[in-house]
Amino acid sequence: MPLPPPRDHRVSLKDAVAFARRHREAAGKGKAGERGGMFHKEGVAQLLAQPGCAGLRFYFGNDDGGASAIVLVGVDEKGNDMTSGVVLEKHYPCPPYCGDPSELNP
Image (cartoon, rainbow, N blue to C red):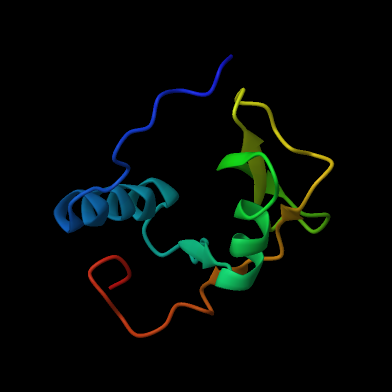
């Protein structure tokens, strides 16, 4: 499938808070599931700086121990994964790397 046309990916904080809340609720009350994750900008910048990279794609996965994984890969102008380039995972999971409480992570 070709790369979709550019669009504004920004959402309001109100919508983002609702997305995060629904995810927490779907995981079940009292469950300590992963809420999100963080990548340092250097890795993401390297991924996006690859020649021919027009965007990034993420895949949900699980590591060998069953913990959640978020795989990031560059996407070329035809919408294809750039699997011979930089591929990222090893995110910092939240929790425990959540930062101070916020609207997204109360």
